[in-house]
Amino acid sequence: MTDERPDDGRPLRRGWTTGACATAATKSAYAALVTGQFLDPVEILLPGGERPSFALARERRDTDSAMAGVIKDAGDDPDVTHGALVLSTVRRGPAGGGVAFRAGPGVGTVTKPGLPLAVGEPAINPMPRQMMRTAVAELAASLGDPGDLIVEISIPGGAEIAAKTWNPRLGILGGLSILGTTGIVVPYSCSAWIHSIHRGIDVARATGLTHVAGATGSTSEAAVARLHGLDLGALIDMGDFVGGMLKYLKRHPVQRLTIAGGFAKLTKLAQGHLDLHSGRSQVDLGWLATLAAEIGAGPALVADIAAANTGLGALRLAQAASLPLGDAIAARARATALATLDGAPIAVDILVVDREGNPVGRAG
Image (cartoon, rainbow, N blue to C red; front, side):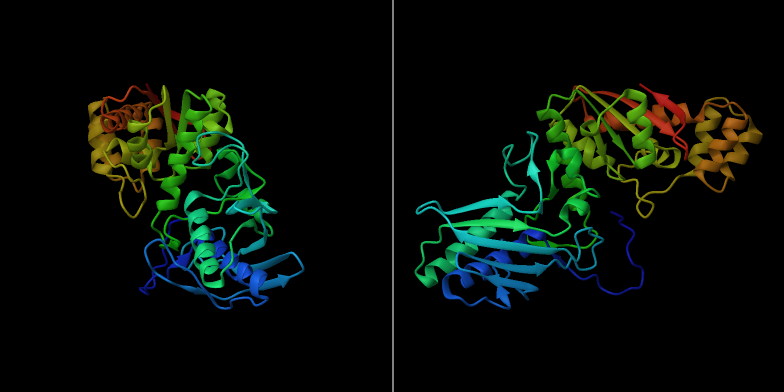
């Protein structure tokens, strides 16, 4: 995922979650199972009261099942599931059984504790399940039908798409999750990423891991995994959202946290910023120059650092002079992290890396 917004001045278009698409497909397929006719377009009720309509992309009915499909439109959000086909196949379930869910091809299965679903359950989150049950109940009442169904959700190609998501490290195997708490995708809200950080921490805790590492990107993640021998489940892809990770850990602590990132990103953390995105915080070269002076840089080097083009340029100047600027940044970044954790019982250490993943600073 990237959160580099388009900069053409136009309003950003909202989209729909996989949960909303699955609900629309389920409602239409259920109508066809009972009446022989698919609803197209099909209207659903979202948790906030909105009632959007969805066009069908696929439909099929046979003697004992009906299937409908909706193409996910994520609006202007850079969502890897944009354009995916969400299919719902409905069949009669046991009398009095209500609505039961199954994972079809391309939808994952939960294999680790710590998620809001039990191990072995299809990765269809609680709110999408509630939305589908509400849609079935609404339609069942109007049709005079008991509404006892088995609902199988599938996404063609979902296993391949899931490899680009958090699912493998969360222990959701075989495909994507059916997600969404509102049914609406708000472009660039970053809520999905922060939600994934929280679930990563939940799963790590539930599986007994005592040491997790939050990394700003793939290079620092690979470096910290090598350094500490951490497996995938211990790696938290925090991206720019170090504040979101730290605030959640304050309430849900682990024994040890390593924060790993590039020099520029962790300089922002050292300066006190908890959102490391380039549009929301900047490396202050004057601040870096003052820090360099505090750890022994002479006037000429201080002036050169203040005049550097980038944070990485400042680091290279310090390295050429054998000045441990990376260690100083790590120490200040650690201080920011500890202040944010506010006494939570977590041992914190920092790893600063260069663009090749080589350590250039450590603290803790």
